[in-house]
Image (tube, rainbow, N blue to C red):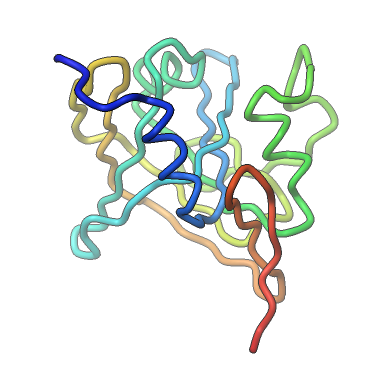
Length: 163
């Protein structure tokens, strides 16, 4: 695919988009991995389908491809450090060390303290050059009330305030 737009111009434009921050996690043969994402999309409520895209070079991509499952934790405003950890901005041999997790249906780890959890099974994948678009059925969902979301805008984390 021929590149027609300067990647830096696209990055600059995308910095204007504010988004919630989530961590996608998976497990396969007792190996766990997770990656920070600020984009996933619900594509259908019945059946309950969503999409997430991951770089093919990531360990989380590899585990999801093998296990065909993933968990998604929507991070709360208090969890910016976890967003950095799972984005690789904080050095850690084991990103899950000392981290409290739970599971719902698939066994994918879900991070305690998040706003909501989605437990998913991959039903379809699409090659997207250097990434894979995973379409997954949401098998279970759980929300934790009373917390504010972690928001990412222009390379910084923000908190919401109600007007």
